[in-house]
Length: 459
Image (tube, rainbow, N blue to C red; front, top):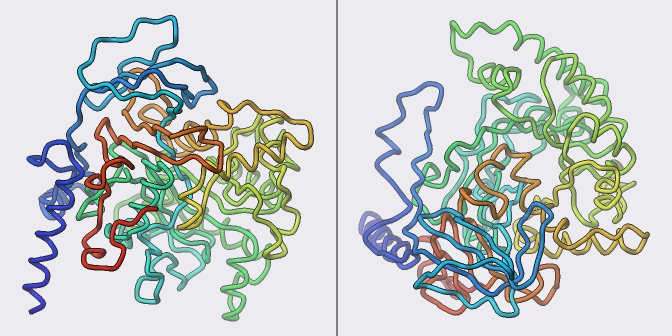
């Protein structure tokens, strides 16, 4: 009976996945890879992602926000073979394309990117059997990889696509540990395997955490660290041990740390307090690595100049604060003040619901800045959820903005994306139309949801 159910569900999933594509003969999910390509010790779980089939498309006329701070009305976007071919304005001649999408009264942006997600590692339903985001058995677990916990059937992926226009995301291990492990950067597409979702060419990230979480988790067990000075002591000794690693006898944790020291793996450091972020920057210089982004950085506004000078992004919420002592000094003007200091701002979610409304979170942060006299243009605010996270994830050369040659990861909004009343109307990933609010057949449903009440419901 169990085998029969598996076969039935697999067949159903294949049907549903094909329904998302413009050509049912192809799929973005390449299953063969899961067992055939794992021979390279440098990349034992390689991406097998293949774009869904796309159709040459022109969106016109439409308001364009290009993700790099540019924005104009009466523009157009031309996609072909999965790439952005050209983006034009009211005075430029659009190409003659058979498939034209009317963008009248609508807005087009790059696909939304969430730099901090736990989808798949903490999927819905959120039950203990699904809790795979924190390997809380040692203060340093650089040997674990978030992708090995990702459940591709998590309905949260579909909701993020349909409600939030999210086309790429970084899944991070949790924050119980000083060193939580490697992250996974994914394309937000239906797939039976995590390899079929892995963003091709994306560098790995490395999750670190400072502050209250590690010292609470391990201090509560009567072991180091139980203080912030303990946090730094354990971190520094672990880095020193890693620097002498020669690779002759494989050590999974030290392989990751060596990748960080070699600049191949990007550090994403969960850190709330400004003073602690400044200490982490010094520790990174001492050990010879770079922090790419501080996450949950509620006090970045206090050290905007320091973050700018060290080229460190701040991934922040619009207004989450006060839920623990290190979040006490969070202020809603944080993002605007960081931006005003010339440092990099990213709006992140860290939440299965929040990822569906990153556009609204960005708008809230913008409004808070405006109330204190910092007026940031809409087109620049859009970069907080498109180009800036792509930059911090090391994928900005491939996605994050509407520029010729980049992946055609595109959202057509039915109104101003910074309005609470607007929603994604259409979402393309690599030029493939994967969601269309006007077409129920383009609402992907995971295997897990089949037969469930409200399956595919993305109201």
